[in-house]
Image (cartoon, rainbow, N blue to C red; front, side, top):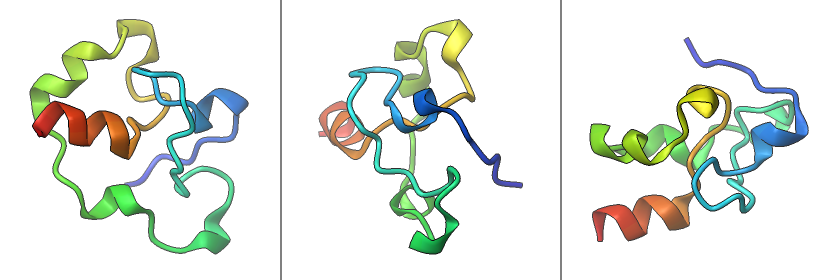
Length: 68
């Protein structure tokens, strides 16, 4: 089940604080989000502060830098 986010912070990457461009937030009209087709290695979540886990999506830039 995809969690819906509805706060300003939900649009902010928990790693770099930039826009995560995730449409799993309140803007469902954007369609399926880019993040649904990506693989997020478990270790990337070690970069997210514990109190921010599962509150917002990691952005594509941070994901690409991590796996690159």
